[in-house]
Amino acid sequence: MRHSSTLAVALAAALGSSALADVITQWNFEAQTLSASTGTGTASLVGGVTNTFATGFGGTGTFALNTTSYAAQGTGDRTRGAQFSGSTAGYDSITLAWNERHSNTSANTVAVFATTDGTNWTEVQVFTFTPAASGTGDTWYQRSVTLGAEYANAASFGFRVLAAFNPGGSTYLASRSTSTYATSGTLRFDDVTISGNLVPAPGAAALVGLAGLIARRRRA
Image (cartoon, rainbow, N blue to C red; front, top):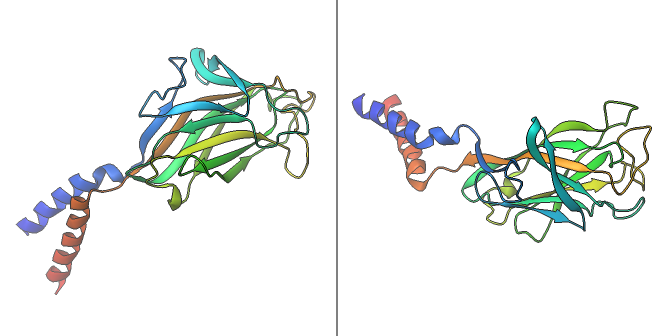
């Protein structure tokens, strides 16, 4: 019994940190820089967009990445937006989360792409909404994406959020129904977070096997 109890304590210590998702990399933009605020990573601009730092999700006194200079109407579908690059090495069960603000004249739809090597990108999610006269433009949305196992343990991981045509069409749709899409519309990003579960070290994995072996012997 004593050996079994000791093993249980050791196993809990080895694996406890992997039970809950850890923040791997995060950008909160409070320092008004493209470098990550937690972990190691860099935000960048895709397709010729430009940026400033504007009021963040937390309100006055906070900051977010504000992007503009989007493609002309009917051109450049899924070619302009923001990119967030980091590493998921040593982690699995990767999730993405961020706050995203659409101005009235921005596209109502964004497509999310992810990569494991920094070169090849795969679309993993599309977010869209039906524009209304109020409440849909100049509004923050909380976004999250759960990725597949292929994005675990990727040293050159990254993801992009790109403005997209309204689903089923060939043009952008403004985020407010009473507005017209414009290249000067803005997409704003805040609290961009890559999370995952820490993969147990080989020693911890061996403890799992040993625990199972002892349990089987005790039942025998």
